[in-house]
Image (cartoon, rainbow, N blue to C red; front, side):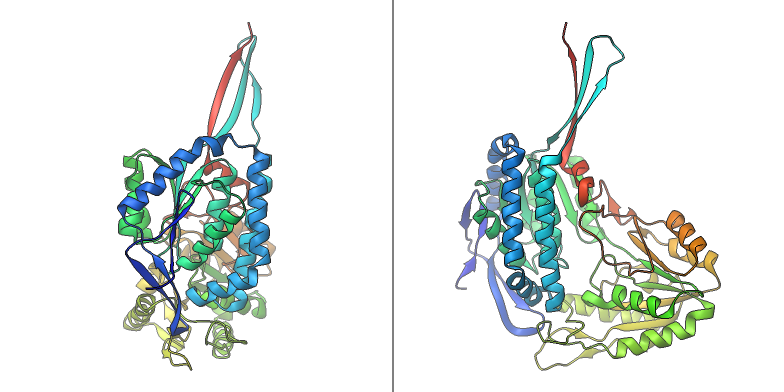
Length: 480
């Protein structure tokens, strides 16, 4: 393979004997690039480089850290069209979504450039005369970041930026399916003046690179976003080695639609939340919990909107939904569609693989009705453009169904009733609640995370990120 994109280790671009080919899911003949696959030794070298760089970076002034993050954010925003196009080629989001995600990444870096200067402490009066109490926050050390394929630039950004802002050094492993966006971020950080070893990029298989990061005693903390099974394994290993860890995993998010909902608002929220970004969002509205009085009108209106969607090449003008990210993900989606049929669900529209001008992983968004909450289609995360409708009698049953899941990331309700909206906000068992909005779609300055099986540890994003990326020190001083 020629022109291999190398790993970044200790400030040097380091290649390897193995490389992985990054293919465009919209056009399987389009090679995005070839990316180096790190081995155990290279991963250990990256960890060593981050450990060596930590004392200097931790001692750097908040202004210096903030200036570098701000420069990186400006570069991302200046290149948002280029980066968005790269993202769409490797992941399959529409170009508009890709550019939007790149813009968000730039905004995240700029936000944390300010947070580097806003890290504060406390001073308390002791219960003992003449003693002062000071509470400060300090960086953890080397932080391992393991990121998913569905948001290949935004999620790395919201992990990298706070880690660096608060004085940590980083070893990052991006998802093997989408290394290009992370490689571009690494290049931007180098050009922004980040000292050698402060940020290290090691691309490769989770069983090799991820395992080495989790096992290393030199890594103080792990932040992971991905599948439930992998997250639980990482959590167990991190606990064994005394690491701080943060896990963002699956979701089976409900969108409740009550009889009094505005039909257009409800259909728009369901269409966006369930199917945009090809349904490949942990916050996607995969369970549509619909009250009996509006059920038939809602299903008919949503199915009509779905049939009008244009599913095509992610870079083609007018495309509403691009392809599924990979052949493995497409097979999983089709398998769950078959399971839903076997369980007795009625396929209202979609669910078939599509052929387009270019060969790719195209799937017509699928909508099932006549399902109940005990079916696998409503218990397990599909992670594709597949949603099912559960019919309920009233608000009380809707709330019970919404909460009847092992997950608790995001939950939504469409209603014109202030009473029901207020009650749902308080009683939905989810980390994030949306009223008359899609369950997917969050602001970068607000905390992100869930409950139950969806998340473990401190929240991500906004000022809440400091809870994970810093440790608290309490100092007692007696002046004599």
